[in-house]
Length: 265
Image 1 (spheres, helix red, strand yellow):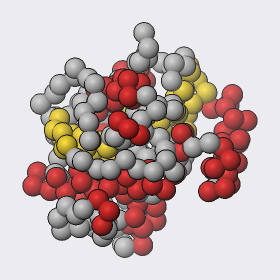
Image 2: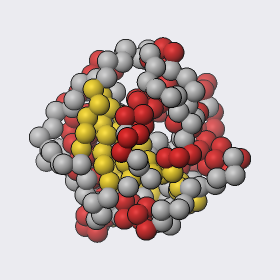
Image 3: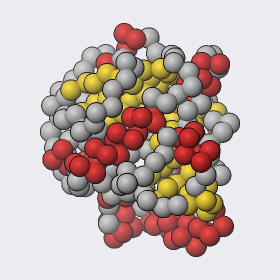
């Protein structure tokens, strides 16, 4: 069984709770649109986003985490701790694989079925996917290294995870894999342990580029981003220059596979 962990930032840290809720609702519908029924969903949140969507596979873990400081490191740390809380909460479900999903992204409906067909794998990283600007009629194709830009990118065998034995106070929470906060690190860290994860053999995720959802980097201003990681800014400039070559029309087939629809009708 595959368990999707969806960490949701607290309302006080949201740019717009209304917009975040709309994005979350779409993400939830996308995750639950799997062709296989061999999955569960665990949403970790202080406050439950506004949605009328229900599904028997969805569970909520209500937490009372403090509001993170408005800087990159604290926000990344907050997301990681929400993921850890979700991973500990699903332990008794005996998941084969887990995948953390940002609460604004959309995923392929083929992921759960694929993991069920490959139960002995160490896991996968999403090497190819799409980038989508909210409201656009086009979509950008990311043919490689998708896992370096989007937090919704790792599907990992649950037995490989290093987690604390039990839930700890927020400020003292340690003892978990660093890649739960730094998603690009999973590929290298797990390979060093002798348990390498493989590239997912199909585009697995649509990275939704918005400023109201879960993307920490999207909410960071350019100057702060440059000071933290100049290469990330340069990659953004390169992406802008290459955009005409990587864009294609958003097809009905992509919309159907990823349950992508405009949140503003």
